Length: 116
Figure: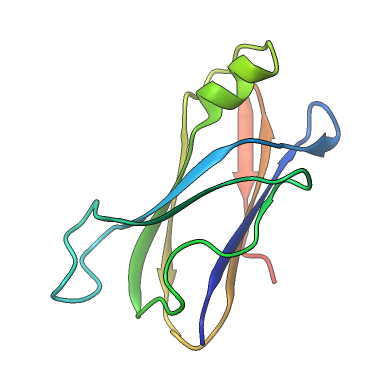
């Protein structure tokens, strides 16, 4: 079954970003039972900056959003960031595949890619 995981690395500190709240939402109603913005799962990054599984056991084909609470993370590390949250919208084309969405984070920038 297709699952979803994420990983946040703080590139300004050169270490995993521990304690980042992450929420998974529906972006464009992948099925009739969901409305855009509906929360589907949530988690907090562990000591390795990971949320091993977020959301249901299977993500149907469609568009989804991962919302990262970077404001709270930077406040907890006594820093100010430019982006209070990072929102990544992505498409699940094959519901049987595992999807991994890493984020490379710094106070004034971020990047992402499809991981494995």
